[in-house]
Length: 360
Image 1 (cartoon, rainbow, N blue to C red):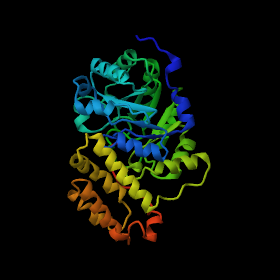
Image 2: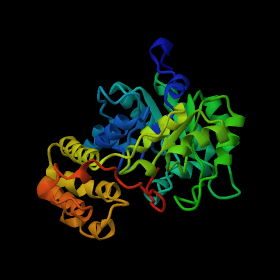
Image 3: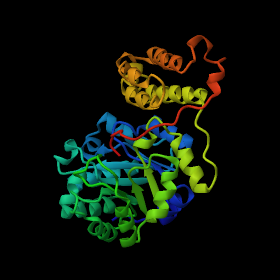
Image 4: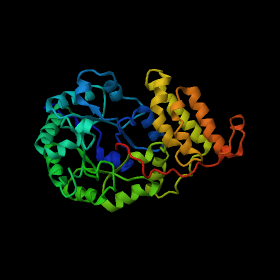
């Protein structure tokens, strides 16, 4: 087992004490440009998108891109998934060699693409395999290892206490719990009492996840469950400003005002430009992938529903600007007066995250 140099390792409990709000790992969303937006608005820790361990060990371009470390994106946690302990261990070593500070093991993704191979939330039904994976990864690296999991395979079949003990015995450094079961997927409500139960049965730092959608939710989860960190998923898509609201409420400060249209416009363009650069300056690929973000950025705006039906027309930066000008016109701002309009400095409408389903 590699020798651990504690002086060089991040202390997860201390990191959470400074800023407990975390941008969740979401496949197809949590790339570097998204993380950059969240961090700019107040996120304390960010996660990568989920990375298949087998893809990383085979040198897949997308997997290597997801592992890349950026100087202004720290602390940064890379999440890997897989069902073979030796492959997970090898992938973990590669993640550490890339300069990543913390590794997370996925035992919560309910997607059939993942669970059909025995990984993700399927591990909740095979705790012996989960234990082998935890120990293999922990023994392969010297950096901290965390585990993100769900409450259990199904309602009434919870494994919170078993997983907590297993994680402690395996040397895992922190636990993140999405307070839903595998069978729930992303439906229904998260049961925060499961987070409370985890806090009560482990000495490890606990990160709560599920239904954090507005500024007050973070502090409420901390007070209600006793968790050390709060992971934010769907609530921040198209609304990275949520992190600023969460942080302010936690600090006992007034919530910051909603972003103005000018700030919104700047964020949308910066996010798109970041994606274009991230994907090797491929503006068309960035545009296709950015549509789902744009759908979320425009939620709550006038004409947003009809606008989302036209997202296929966003093919590059030029068509993105045309689309933005179109929806701003519905807000009363025409493209030829955008900078001069008094509406430009008015706040955006409240962002409604309810009813939106995406991995978290």
